[in-house]
Image 1 (cartoon, rainbow, N blue to C red):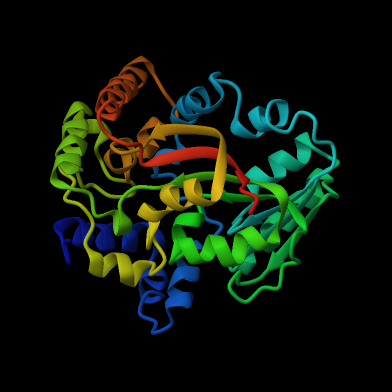
Image 2 (tube, rainbow, N blue to C red; image 1 turned 180 degrees about the vertical axis):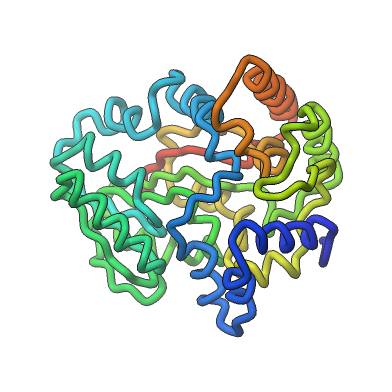
Length: 325
C-alpha cells in the first residue's frame, strides 16, 4: 500500500484552488465524522468528475438498462418493481437525493425516506422536493449507526454511492440493514466495489495512464488551473484517511457479503476501473461535446471495455433479495 504519492500532493493543491482554503482547513479536525461530513456537506457542483459527463451517464444507462436513454430508476420501475404499487424505501447516505426524487416521481405511491449525516444536503433536497410537489418523501438527518429505524419496516433499502463509506460491511449488513428489511425485502446498490482506499495495483494504474495518453493535451488541463494532467500516480493512504476516513474503507467486502446474505435478482457491472481516475479533474472538458471530444470518449470506453474482459468491474448496479433463514 502507498502512504503518500505525487497524486496526493497535486490533489491537495488542486482542491485548494477549486474549493478554497476553508475546505482544506476542514480536514484538520480530530473528529473523523466531521472530516467525513466536510467531504459531502456542500451543494456546490465542482463539475470535474466522470459522473458529471452526460455521455458517460448514457454509457451507464446502456450497461444497466440496455438503453442509452433509460436511467436505472426507470429500469427498476418498469422491470423489477413493475407490479409493486406500494413500497416503503429507505435510502442510506442519500445526499442531495436526486435519484430518490426520480424514483418518487416515477412511483408516487411509494413512501421514500432519505437518511444522511449531511444536514444541508438534506435541507436542499427537501426544498427541491417541495418545489416538485413530491409528497411521498421524508428526510431524516441521522447517523445510521445511531438511528433506530423500525425493524422489518422497509420493502427496499437503497445505496447509491454510499455503501462503500461504511466499515465492516459484513457486520453492517447483518446488524443494521437486514433487520430493517421485511421478509423477502430488496437491496439496491449502485456502488464502487473496487480496492479498499483506492489502492489500485500497478497493472490498473498503468492502464489508467494509457487512457490519459489517449486524450488530447488541450483536454487534459485540470479544472480551474493551468496544470496539465499527464499521469496518474495512485492515491496514498494518508491523504485518503485525512480527507475522508470513510472513503472506500471496506469496499472490497461489499460483493462477497451481499452474495452471502442476499439472492441476486439483477447484477450489472459497468466499469469505471479506468474512466473514473483518467477523467478526474478534467471531466469539465467533456460536459459539452463536439465530434472530436465524443470520439475521444468512445476511444476511452472501448479501451476500458477491453480491460474489463479480464478484470472485475469497480462499479456495480444490483438488485438483491434478502435470504430467508
